[in-house]
Amino acid sequence: MDLSYLVNQIKGDTNIPTLRLRQAYVVALYTSPKRLDIQIAGDTNTLPSVKYLDSYTPTVGDTIFILTNGSDILCLGDIAV
Image 1 (cartoon, one colour):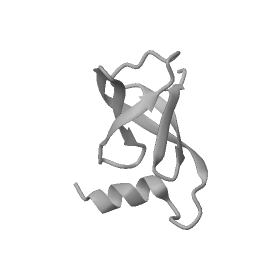
Image 2 (cartoon, rainbow, N blue to C red; image 1 turned 180 degrees about the horizontal axis):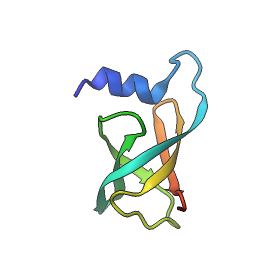
Image 3 (tube, rainbow, N blue to C red; image 1 turned 30 degrees about the horizontal axis):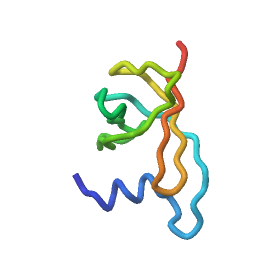
């Protein structure tokens, strides 16, 4: 896994951080602390230790929306099907 590639995928334009809504998939769960490992749609690299809203109960395989702002990532919840 190329770390600089992952960082650039998350950050986007390094000069001006912008808020982005993106689709991703849950690939792993952790309970202490509450975190997710995700893959952004269209990519095969895993981003570890992503925070999520307390009202969301994640499941491996969920299709989710995430907010990114620079290197900050927050999982909003799953997409209803």
